[in-house]
Image 1 (cartoon, rainbow, N blue to C red):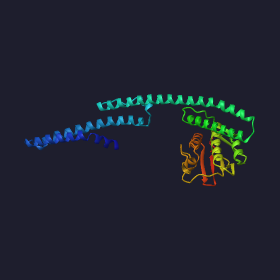
Image 2: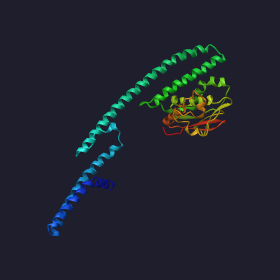
Image 3: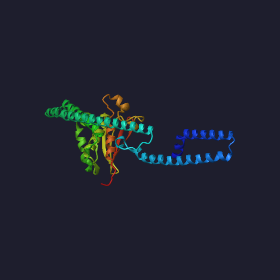
Image 4: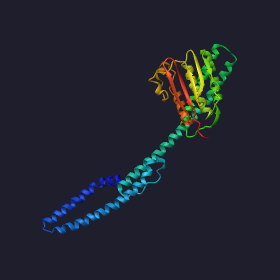
Length: 326
């Protein structure tokens, strides 16, 4: 019914012209003394013909509307064929749409090509920069001093930043390297703790680790990145005290620290891209993408991540692993 009223509005000018012509003819015949019956009879026939024409024309419009309705949900790449045009404006609109679709395809292909080139470049760069990092780490292994441990900590931080770059690029890639299966959560978390052992020692932080006797359905590499990032933030913003790692309800990993905490106005936005908040403004090195990447990865893996914090008392990050069917 809505389509019919839209159709009548589109034909309002034509209908008005027909009514004006009919009224003019009827009035002229009346002035010449033609009988009323002789006037109304042709007007009734003309009205009947107009109604029949409108019904037929509306049925054609309705069929086109039904053909175009599914196309509204398609992207420009899938609009290969449009219904045939029966009027000059329709043909013009069709040519415009086809031209825009062609431009869209060309733009998408060029953007995809540029993106692949950028990913390839940074992938090669990441692999190349790992060579001098490994060389420096080997050189520092022969020396055990506060200075060497500090340098090893900084090297670990550089490696983490390189990993963040690759993760940021791969998240929007057309292809992924997810390997989803059941993993022992304890092994993944212990690996992340070992990487940050130097930071724990340098800051003299106590680690309260409860055995994580559970398996989770996830991807080991991507989840390891999330755990490392959360642990790194806990160490970074905890000057004294401890960091506790435990599970709740069997399927929720909790990483709790006694650090500076997060301001209440910042807490709802910590997973936004580029948002650093008050803590980030205090720490000039904060990029604001670490937790954003964690949230994106957890969403892709079907996990959930949330944070609770109290300013000046610490933060607890919870990563929940639902147990879907394999």
